[in-house]
Length: 125
Image 1 (cartoon, rainbow, N blue to C red):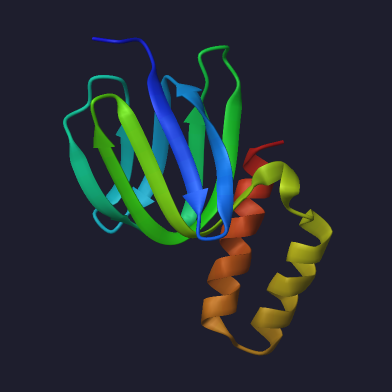
Image 2 (cartoon, rainbow, N blue to C red):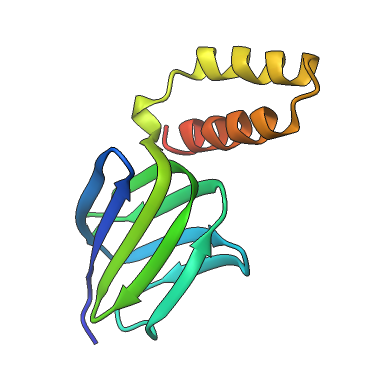
C-alpha cells in the first residue's frame, strides 16, 4: 500500500489544488468519507461542505466545496466541484456579513453556502 495518494481538487472554472496527500475527508450524499492510500475505488456525489486534505509534510489544506463528484481509483482522488475555494481565499468578515444577510432574508440556500464557507475558513486557520 502506498503512503500517499494524488489529489486533484477542480472547480468548474479552475484547478483549486493538486498534490500528494495521506488523507482526504469530504462530505458525500452518503455522509462524510475519509480516503487514504489504497482505498477501494469509489464514485460519489459531493454535498456542500468543507474538504480537508492532510499532506505528507503534516500540513492541512481546507476548501469549501459546493456540490460535485468524488472519484478514487489507482491512488488518484479527483474532487470535481461545482464551486470550490481554499480556506485562505475566503474573507471571513465578508462571509459573516453574507450569513447575517441570508438569515435576515430567511434564505436557507444562501445560509448553507455561507456556513460552509465560514466553517472551511475557520478550520483552515
